[in-house]
Image (cartoon, rainbow, N blue to C red; front, side, top):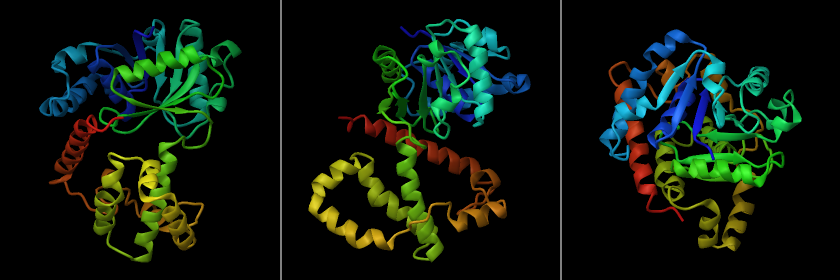
Length: 315
């Protein structure tokens, strides 16, 4: 049974993952190498949890109680040694993750389950340097950003771990309100990111061709396919529409669509100009000092409303 959780890496994903577990009553140890960053981290988390409290998404808990269940560490051994489940959210470099798992293997119980939040690195590479016995206790548990609000969790089941261990982790994630996707085969990007990249490729291509403005392309997605996707999956949509129709439309339309196997040139152009989106105040849209906080809060609010609405549509 998983009771004590350790999260390694307190950046955007890591501290949000820790908050998510703490909201549902779990005690969480959170580690980061930056001691100065840890000094102000609980203030950052407090503000994030305030937004959830405004939308009644904290199950009646006080923010102080939730944060009280998160203990911050600058010492990896002290953070992880008592954990039943350890998930890392450190930078996406396989050498860093290999070194981390080697170190964790020395500190943690043989029964402890190790997980990575990655969707871009392979489990095989990450666990290559740990003993065989530990590999049977390792998996990918991929969250979507923002972890507090996105209800998906992709969990690997690639044949290295037992069904009982997998079910234990699945139960953990279901206990914090996540919708679990069991990924049976190791492919780059897992499931959700591959679907997202397929959509993004066509969106970027439409902008490159000048078919519509960025505002209208986003509008087409939000109020067209995205409106259905909020409650209905692609395969069910295909069934409702008729597979014969989908087959015909696919034959007619797919040859006309983007088939590139690299990032769109319009993305490379914007990266070269340092137009990276929200982080640099300009991407496909512009963000000013006056409206940046408001835009980000509105984005979070939309996700919160969608999260509450989604509870009515879960099968």
